[in-house]
Length: 344
Image (cartoon, rainbow, N blue to C red; front, side):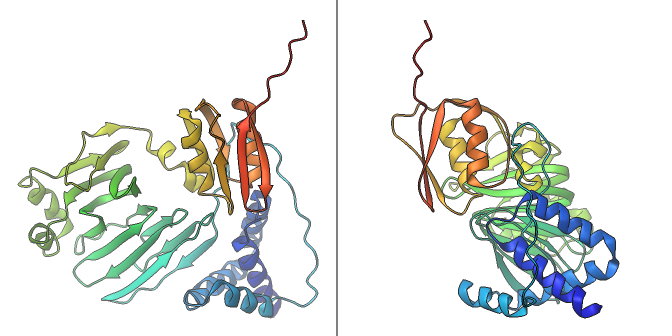
């Protein structure tokens, strides 16, 4: 029985990492996990073991996965979700990993295009990496440090009065004061911080300043920030963008849940220019989406579920006068919809 569960766990792991995994697949996977604690334990074990394979190239990883699959595995029925629009979506998660970090250990994790990943650290803090994201985790006895190298991640931080939690991104450090927040690179190297719960401090990355935070308890961080005129403290539903030049913009009020809706498998737009919408959608599909030069930058409002390219563009064509044309397996070009002759 345990062998069957292990084989099934491998099947689920490979299936959810494939480019054509559907929302129905993820629902079925969650149902399988909830049926038996042994199922969840087997799946977590497969995820942990997969960490050791991060250095293998994609071909080798695929071949190894196939060798572990059951020969002649039955074809699973796929359900196609055709409804795309104003609805709540299940989170798109490619892998969930529980990572037992040792003191002073450093590990690097990355996602590819159209991939997301969740990590749970040894202290219970959780990370949700968006598409095309790379970060490094360094847990030490006196401080918990993450360096975001590219992309975007949500950080759900467990409180620890003895070890501050710091995220370094570009020229800035984000210090958690017991919170849930996201950090994203925008543009070339600007850093955007959004708070979903609690509070964070955004501090320019200067070694003399940051070394002070490493030597104090988290409860003392706020007292130090009072003396730093260039730092800013953000609360729930606040956002700030910090430029590479060292300037921190005025704090803006936002809907943090909308700003990070990608973690729930959906993208929310409000009068967003078409090309910006297409650029955002492109992060979540394997191929490329281009917009023809003659297409106006129509404003788009709606919720698009993160699914396959065709379904996402089908919804977009319902709210904007466009026609997507698939040029190849890896390229879709968006054209202006043809003007229909009037009936009169």
